[in-house]
Length: 80
Image (cartoon, rainbow, N blue to C red; front, side, top):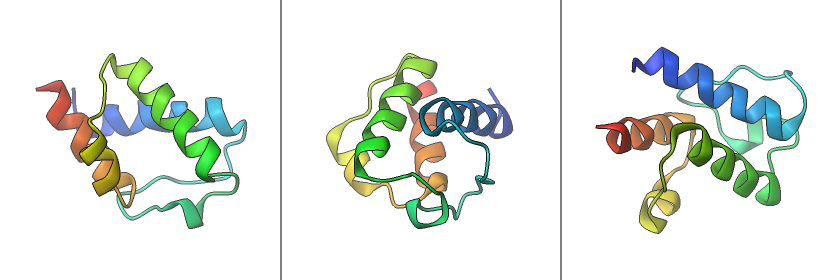
């Protein structure tokens, strides 16, 4: 799966949880850049991403994620 395909599925997960499309996800995107991406919705997004890719993030991976690029990198590693 390409990085663009992963980003597309991650974007779909964000739309599902946040119920809007008023954002453009890039590697540098953080919670401050997306309306509604708060602590509660963050966990819902992570859960939706895990379900979408049939993966389970490790706690340390979650703690080390600071932007969407980190999320994509972690997904890529989990899919290998």
